[in-house]
Image 1 (cartoon, rainbow, N blue to C red):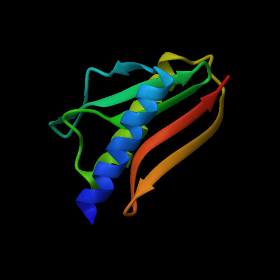
Image 2: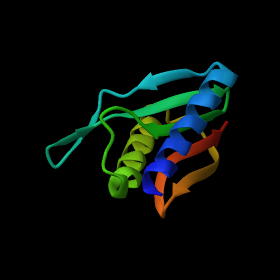
Image 3: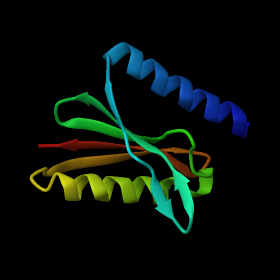
Image 4: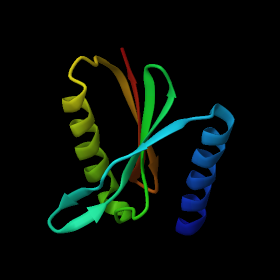
Length: 103
């Protein structure tokens, strides 16, 4: 079941990217405790982005931690952004992506 959920989420995001012609920004990678993982930001439309693990992705139980760090870095770099809402995507009790709506 775990593998099928990951495949579903991956297919969902690929479908969203293809349908909405998203632009993506790949971070240089986050280093925490000598671990390096990639978090990608995809702009759905002005004022709406989502963050998702890239390749290499952190282990499923640590995705939320790395997404959080990347969103915080993004907000620090874009201090004029005012976040309106955030929505975590969760599969099997683990956060797999974060949507952010902002002004």
